Length: 309
Image 1 (cartoon, one colour):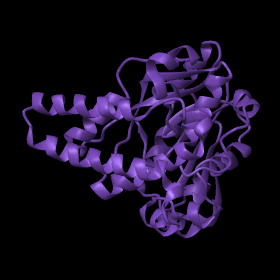
Image 2 (cartoon, rainbow, N blue to C red):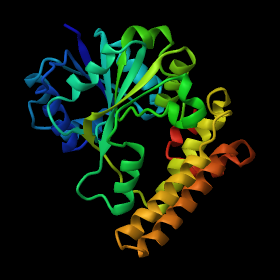
Image 3 (cartoon, one colour):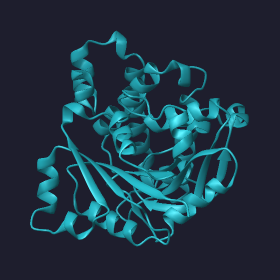
Image 4 (cartoon, rainbow, N blue to C red):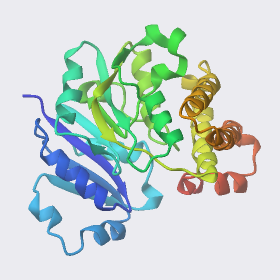
């Protein structure tokens, strides 16, 4: 029997985390441990105050650290260090499985040879707008796919696309490849996927394994998120220098505009273009952050602790 641990970084968690954990505890494939790597203990205590949360479930363990210690890559490595399972499932606190077969379906992907990581499909929540709904459909289609180095010419940067919102890793391969990068502002999942691809492993997208996960970002948040995305790509030219992201973004904008027109909501096209302009501005600022004053980077980023370090 294959063993699976679940690792969830948390920060200011809300009741959605409880919903996620309850779903994980009822999966058709029993999880060995649920490991929470929490940033700032006081916020976690607010959630569990008055609840017999940890005592009720002996297979839930939690490790606290400060915001100064948090890093997208190394905080997840900390969780892996406390895991003993053959496979581990990375999730975020705001993703909720749509059914009880999520772990089973992701685990099944590893029956194929050379799979390093398998990631799930993300579906929009009920409050998601038309643009966010289309974005989820564009990035997470209903057809599964296994990606390898042979797809680089056709898929470009999409070959490396993988999301730790919900992604399962084979432990021995993960350790062989050195785990997640120790320090990164963003994109630890894609950086690992690129390393796996370059070492002749494959990435499995499992469309039947689904979680509810979407965001409603404003223009400023779009700029900040894409600034961090650009910084991560600038910091890792060995991964991103030879694959273009801009063409994929343009393709999505054009496809989304057509989708909105088909839905007979042309006024949303203006919102799409404004949001896309902020995304592109943030991305270009991030790609060129070394030319910017540090105080500008500090104001624009979503992850200020990264710059303090």
